Length: 395
Ligand code: SAH
Image (cartoon, protein in one colour):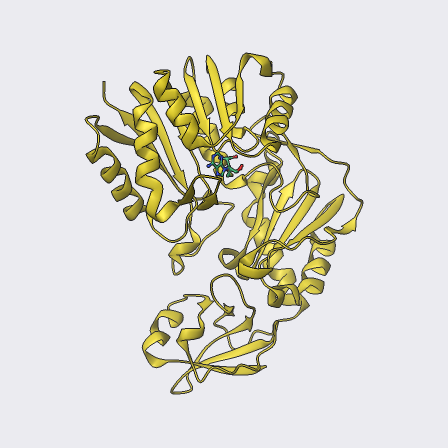
């Protein structure tokens, strides 16, 4: 156990439960720390703050995992954490329409740097630092004790700048035969745990997809931008959309969207699936005077294409302006972002900015953040990164 000292002016924040350790908060930082080192964290007056571990991440250098000085970070600790996490998701485990969701959400469930997702009978671990990865045996043992599974896979997300490291991904149990077919609110999706960082479905948007199907798609012409595997399009069609257009730059999106439509008995030929830069598509749609009743905007936080670099924290208003220009009277824009660099308040100000440049006006009719299985803690606001606004335009 290594002792680290938090600067007095930062100590209050950590005492209130802020879990992510920053190098700048530490007094006399010891450059000899090794990934996975357990930390005894105190303030400059030697008052105990918590126990944690060292693990270099995209943001931060490790996590505080408990403020209880008597707790030992051992097998029992991890078994308890995972057991509690399962307990909190009991209703999802019993839901016969959904067999894919998050089972363990990092700091929200008591251990930053690790998430676990369920995809039918398979589990996927995401490790966000080499330090977190040092606790792997404890986590695997807890899974063996507590989970019913066919197989377990993992992704190491601790390459340079938090990039995904390509490596053996199978961990234990049986190897999957891919795609695994999962169900979310009765709708099926193809999941590939062996093809890189993204597996086919973003589980944090479950409630948004459900709202689209239940209340926003019947009879509508839908444009799904940054459509990836078409999840929003599939829910739209099953909610009664008259037509969907899915636009994504990546070649893979074409076959994967067809696959998801087909799994759900939808004739994909009745829909448009377009492999193109969204920004070009907006120009094209404007030229052709195409209008949509529902436009879904769910871009990555950062993306570089041949012509454009998109940074959500800077470019979201401009993206939204493009969407406004092709949205029908009384249409709806679903503006979503997973960018942790700004909060909901700021996101709403982006919406204001975009509409200030336009004669159209709008009302926010729904607002979403992460669903309960993506458990967050109030002391760590940036952990609740998802922000989704349903904007109803005027007539
Ligand atoms: N909205 C999707 C997830 C989007 S993931 C869903 O809910 O399933 C981000 C996607 O944006 C990726 O598939 C990526 O290929 C695509 N993308 C990034 N830049 C793009 C651009 N300029 N034009 C079109 N697609 C883009």
